[in-house]
Image (cartoon, each protein chain N blue to C red):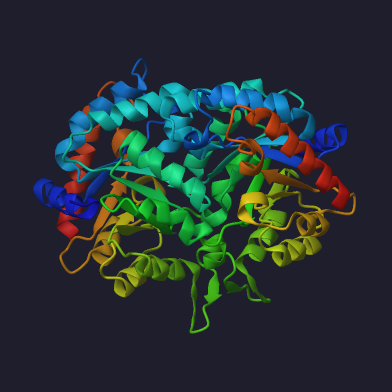
Length: 267
Length: 267
């Protein structure tokens, strides 16, 4: 089996393209709820509605050793048929990326990871060598600063295209094992549509709806492939912090169901 | 005080531009030496010869919770007058980078960090806001894949320059608090020389000598500024794995002294 076939299977069985981001910003947790209990109750309430969970390492690292323990514990708690993505945005020189890949895939046991392309092929190769895992390469991110470098026009010799397009082309060239996907933000729909047209086969991980203001309908319409799948839509704060009170888990469940249904209407 | 003035002070007092990378790849440790003992003994043996230590997070994350504990313990063990750099190569959307900055600077307590520029300004700003800490932005890295994107020619409207030059220009624009440096690999001396000419004021962190094959003499000659400083040269494997036997610490000390002296001959 491989990550993307497992993901497709889960998309079908849950009838959902929704990925929930378990990013438990400690400053936003309801009073007297521990980091792990928060995650556990959000997972209980949302699992029927998701195709995957994504854990952003920053919010765990910010809590030090306890955070790292909660990261492991949360990963163990996620049901086995729901893929878990390490949103770690790692990359380093080859020798070092090998240690990062070991950390995400062996030490922790994630099914997929996000990586940053700036250091080039040998920084991503160690992740790709885990053929049964998924590797989402940052292509066009959802944040305002994305335009600073990703949208710069690059001369490749043949043509002049934005840097993020070069990243997508390289990703396709590097995709020997079929385990690469792209991070394409919902905040720049034209870019997402273009990359979908040019790379019909590459799965997208789409952040940027909700708090970041991306358009969900357009993201689904232009991000889906011919099978009306090929993308997963991530929502973090919009789901897990739907309520800041003691009903946070119920609110997260309702928010996840609503998003799942809305996405299904558009695809 | 600020990171770069602390660093200059240490460069002067130790008469050294050498930064030792504490990257204790567990597979290469001498038998029956724990991760922390390895670091402790390397620090004891090398501290007279270094201006800074750099800890690459990958090798600690690969060891899970124990690795994270050793990371903290090692940081506490480094003498207070020697700056410690978190070689974490982090960056994410603003909201998330804030958590990464908190993790590196508050939760762990590092003096400086390395960051990846691909996500643009808002991914780096949360680190810069720690005005007393240093932020080394990856510009031209030392690995083979660096050329994949960093050397692509970019049209900025005014001129056509490689992407890494655009990164250096942005770094200068963003340097409101004077706490930015650049990572410039010793494996591409022409690029390093060019960036030094264009940005005489930006401190360089230079990896890539030793195992990676960069030329030390040329890196110092072309990387130094008018004060014959402005760069620190990192060596990791060459120092800490100078011997794989029980004499590893003495060998690391000798290797560090030799490198320090060699660098001083060239500057």
